[in-house]
Length: 156
Image (cartoon, rainbow, N blue to C red; front, side, top):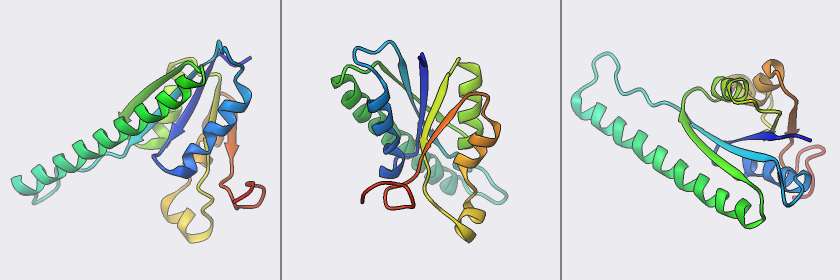
């Protein structure tokens, strides 16, 4: 049985689809800890030629993104706790794939469960695939859930 499961979330409904798998595989009462990890992309607060006003705006945008991410995690934490699932939330700033892999390595994670966004072609090339990086570099098993409506992704 998995003792610690990491569920990376990006704030989208697509990423939350991974929670359906968590609910299905975790026995209640559970001895497994679920870690909901939300990685907020860093906003550059300094750049060549940046004015104090521009930096101040960037800092406010970053603070708002962090506050929204914290509220998002708190909502999901409450929903899982109501089901009797032990859950912990972690909010951090960084490059998503790197943070997810580092967290898993440093915190004894046994399994990563995440959803993909189903991008292909140019959009995947432009934006990269966090899921693909996790699959390629994870030292623990990764359960990937395709988005609804994609091939094999379930009902819409």
